[in-house]
Length: 110
Length: 110
DNA sequence: GCCGTACTACGAGAGCTATCGTACAAATCC
DNA sequence: GGATTTGTACGATAGCTCTCGTAGTACGGC
Image 1: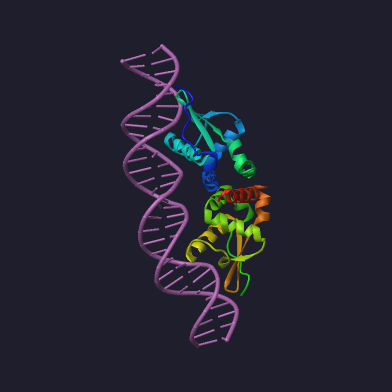
Image 2: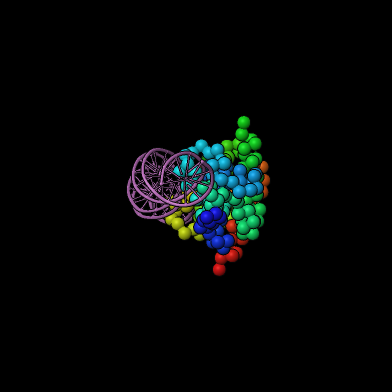
C-alpha cells in the first residue's frame, strides 16, 4: 500500500512552543532547511545527517508531532515535506523567519 | 553600586539554536512577550509568573545566556530588557515573527 | 519464497532541565 | 544597626531527550 499518512497534530493543535522546541535542535533545523530548499518530498535517507538511522527516525518524529512536517509512506520510503501552508496560516512569517535566520547564521560561519 | 551589567554572550556568540531553545519554554516566551510589550526595563518581580522566585531566576538566566535579554542591577532590583537591536542585526525579523506568533496563539485561546 | 532496502520499535544510558525549598547576599529604608 | 525587599546559589528530584544498538516490520524485486 502506498501513501499511508502518519499521525500528526491537526492545524488547531499545533503549539508554538512545540514548533520552536522542534526547531531548536541543530539536526532538526538542518532537516527543515533542506526540506525548504528542495520544496518537494524527500525520503529520510536523502539527508546526510551526523547521527544514526534510529536517531534520524526520532528527529523526524519530533518534527512531525510538532506539526512542522508531514510524512507518508511510499514503498519502503518515508516521504517528508514541510507543512509550510499550515504554519503560515497559524504563524505568518514564523517559519520563513527561522529558516532565513538559519541561512544567515550558516553564511557567517567560516 | 548601580548598573552592574551581568555576563552575556557577545553579538557574534549568539546562536540561533540557543535563542529558539530559550523561547521554546512557555514561561520564557511570556517573559519575552511582556518585555516587548512594555518596551522598557522591567524588574523580575514585575512579572506574574506561575513559578517560584528561584525558578524565575533560572529562566531569566537562560534568556540572558542565550542573548535574548540584557540584565543589570539597579538597587535591589535586576532590570531586564530585550536585546531587540542585536537580534535584529543577526536574525532580521526573527524575534518579531516569534512574538507575533505568540500573540496570535494567545488570541486564539479562549 | 527469499533477499535487500528503508525505516521503526524498544530498551538503555548519559546528560540536560524545569521545578522546588532553604539559605544566603546586596541594596535601601527606618 | 536592623528590618525589608529583591534576587542568587546550592542541592535535590523528577522528567525529558539525544544518542545508540539490536531486533523487527513493510515493501519491492528476483
